[in-house]
Image (spheres, each protein chain N blue to C red):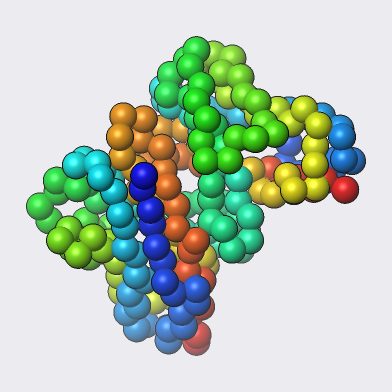
Length: 114
Length: 110
């Protein structure tokens, strides 16, 4: 069985600063993927970044980077130069096995202060 | 470019009523999924369909049925709605790269 743990129910960051959202995972599958989604107050799920378990380098997408530490089973999301529009709920998720269904963490609510 | 389309967006039901949530995707994905999102619980998988003609139970399937009508469409049915099924329901499609989500259906059972 797969499990995702997000230990930070809420985080605060000042505008223009960097912030790290924590995610740890557990799985017995040798091949898996790790995802981060953003859910603003409007409710839609927005894909941010993906990391495959065999990828050698950390994934980056614009201001988002995924700090992948396989031995520690962590996949933290780093947002650089935070913006007010980054205020949202952030979910870490993983896929594995043959059907690639996603298992989600409970989320972290990020608030960016001006 | 519609992506994943869910209907309806909002619905209020009385306990014991039935209804079907519709989902369609136009990205030619093989796999489709139904999740529910409750406060403090994150998203939990109800059912999924790895390909046309197949469906499998997820983490919380009780009280639901699904139909994979064709490659594009995957419906979720509540046969006898219960207050515990009040939630936001998301349909998603994809393969290995990120699953694409619909905008959700906010369902209230009174």
